[in-house]
Length: 178
Ligand SMILES: [Fe+2]
Ligand SMILES: [Fe+2]
Image (cartoon, rainbow, N blue to C red; front, side, top):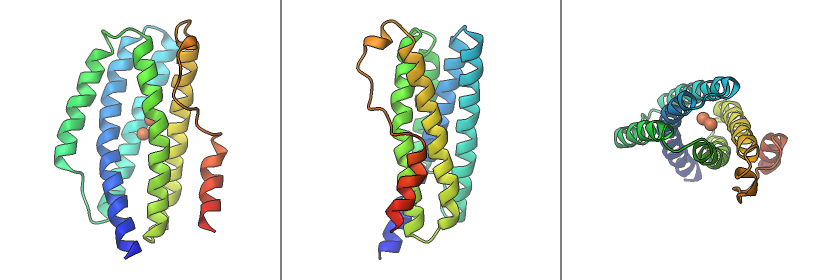
């Protein structure tokens, strides 16, 4: 029973992540087009590409689980992503950086949870990929946090909670097995 629940939870989480990665990728596409600094453009474009890569990986996992993306989530994600991408051009520099960092901090935990579900439903072949995605989301969070903190106003804002060091993603997963 636990196994079946975990598989259902894993599929639900992967469907959510699959669509969220598209929303993020479209939002970042608008975001990097909206900034003028060359390094920022390059890094955010790279982050966009990493989100597309995550989406492909998550899509493959869904297929291996005998499932598929959720069509209504897909439509919603496309609209949200495109809208945020356009808004980046009018929201100034700080708000998209702040919003992105906050969102990324949530993504870390989602992939860690997905890895735990994968373990619990005997799909340990997904664990490494899911933890790697959590680590990449950690890097994204760190980047956007650093950008917000580089801004005179951003420095004075109260930020979302800082994730623990990157190594703890694998450490805490390993410890949770025993
Ligand atoms: Fe991602
Ligand atoms: Fe990300």
